[in-house]
Length: 510
Image 1 (tube, rainbow, N blue to C red):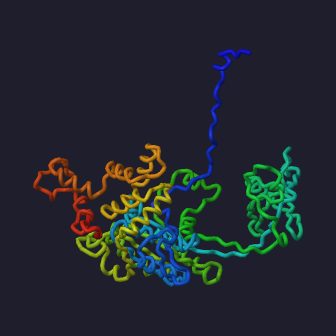
Image 2 (image 1 turned 30 degrees about the vertical axis):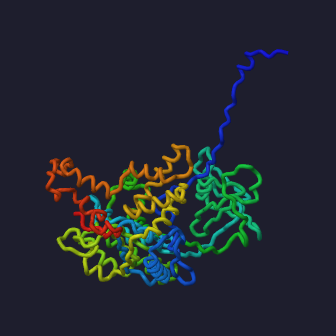
Image 3 (image 1 turned 90 degrees about the horizontal axis):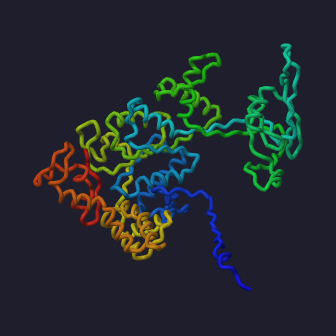
């Protein structure tokens, strides 16, 4: 039996595509590996390599004491300063404190340069962030009807005006719980809310008795087996009676209350209000009088036991960017009755206070510096850099062999920790080009040749002074080293102390 050659040639190969997972990957940020301060719950002492935090034991212990004071609500109206050289974990400590406090405690991060705006005053931006950092937990007891919808019938009547159409006179809705069921007769205005939320038989809802507000909680779990694919959220059948008293807890900030009262909704017939809502509003300041009225209402709620004040944390990074007006305003803001905990961070040593000719430590006036508890962060040792590189590589999904880890740690001690952390992903790409999953020492060395560090860049600038242009566009002469860019000459890696591995704090770059 012979086989035709044409039949064999006409056979097509079947392409098999691999189905990739659609699971959402979490983006890796600079401090994704930090999960907390890493303190022992019994002794409150920091543990090395705990919660992704390496080193800075004294600073973490001090931050743990601050966290305990915040939880006890005995730290409001005070300020802390995190001071240390660049790349020593000041921002990481502040974010770790926020994670230790939990999601319910307000935490508002900002940078010192955010206060400068052409539309809003600097003091207004500061006060706005102050109010964002103060939470208010409102507890309200409301009479509600809660249960699974068993019946939803709109009752129609003839139009009283003599038209041909019909109008909805009321809505009959049946609610069922584990203990019993009840039929309610609702106002026709609630029927629109039911339609907007797409409520149908089998949904679990609750209706507030006073306001008539309706909220859909989800689909009853009895119907969970009806479909193989269901995008809805299933909730259990409510227990107890249909009518019950329910405590509703709402967490808001004082800034939310300010904005809600600063932009009231106009009446239905007010055309000017309607046009104002359609147009994009310009960012305006909230008046001090409005804030005082909000504060008086909040104080009344606190005295009645309805609300509880929760002073949060305001984190101001690069605090040396604030000027003397902002520092003066911070004096009054910290002494006010409603004030959060303020955490400053700076990497400057002796430098000018912005807006003055005064030289002060950390760029902060001495009278404000006296009121601040200062936490110092120290440069990392080579053993700590090695541990941090391992943790960051694991967080970014980079496999390193032992030689690569050792080379990166030595490189970090010579240059900076931030530089070697930024080399991880490019080194991984170079390893993948060479068909390897593990990054080797050669990949790191090749990556370091492609991307130079700040110290090497400064040396190149000094060696090519005659070719470097100044800010006014003229060439510099070979003898005028003072005309170099102050950002380069004032860099901490260019100082004499950087030669022995000890990186000092940055000096003034202005």
